[in-house]
Image 1 (cartoon, rainbow, N blue to C red):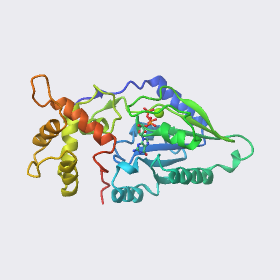
Image 2 (cartoon, rainbow, N blue to C red):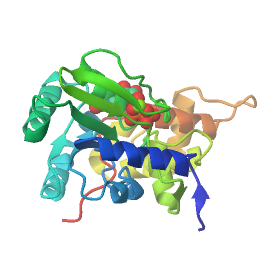
Image 3 (cartoon, rainbow, N blue to C red):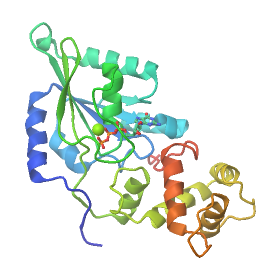
Image 4 (cartoon, helix red, strand yellow):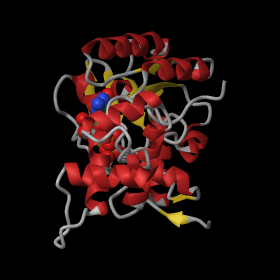
Amino acid sequence: MGKRQISGFSIKEENRLRENLALVDLVIEVLDARLPVTSRNPRLRKMLGSKRRIIVLNKTDLAEQEITGYWLNFLAGEWPVLAFNAKRKADIIRMERLLESLRPRSTRFKRPFRLMVVGIPNVGKSTIINRLVQKSAARTGNTPGITRGPQWIKLRAGWDLLDTPGFLSPFLRNEQSILLLGAIGSLAPGSFDVERAAGWLVEQFLAREKTTRILLDLYSLEPEIKNCSEIIAGIGKARGCFSKGGEVDIFKTSQLILSDFRRGILGPITLERPLQ
Ligand SMILES: Nc1nc2c(ncn2[C@@H]2O[C@H](COP(=O)(O)OP(=O)(O)OP(=O)(O)O)[C@@H](O)[C@H]2O)c(=O)[nH]1
Ligand SMILES: [Mg+2]
């Protein structure tokens, strides 16, 4: 497969990110705990180079705890890593402590500690910032591209923080990555195949006994249906996703499955495991 244009991130915006990078003391790189490899933009990683940073595995409430533990081990050693749930106060406090400990001495009493939050769309950058500021300073939402341009936010006395728009490689080569990123809501609707993404997701659930049971129970499906397309048709029927002709509307059903997955209704599931 050739290159495929997937996001509109331009060279101009990339240059702006580079300029901002030079202004900050520390970068908070946010990844999705369900997808720690694919949600890490290699281009961004290259741009960051040896810039000091912390890595945040966000949305751990939607990921499998045990696998998050493996990822923490796997990523440790590179930069400080935090397993994180942006909705938990205790996690915000842990992050503040870590950031405080990493503040360069040279900035104390002289100038603000400047931080910048980066990551692909929809991983929770603005939500983390809002929790750190304890008010809604940055706009958030469960679709990619909520944050348009970079915005500086006063975090607290002596701390300034830059929220940036989701940064995705403009070209994604790998069809599998496109489906994964589509499933977690990092791609704009229309830029990926919704039916294939939902099908792939259902297959991930069917790959294990535990997650198969979750899926069958949630949509009240008969235990004997174990085939992906039958499951999707069953979900469509159970949820009333019919076309005008009265048949199950696979597209609508696929959208519903993705939406349930993103909201965590399907229960925690991690889509990538570290090699052990
Ligand atoms: N379950 C769960 N949802 C989260 C968490 N963090 C953020 N979210 C949700 O994820 C969605 C995206 O959050 P944003 O903060 O807008 O993401 P962003 O990275 O700023 O996105 P862009 O600005 O589009 O790049 C929102 O619906 C948040 O409520 C988390 O730790 N757990
Ligand atoms: Mg944002």
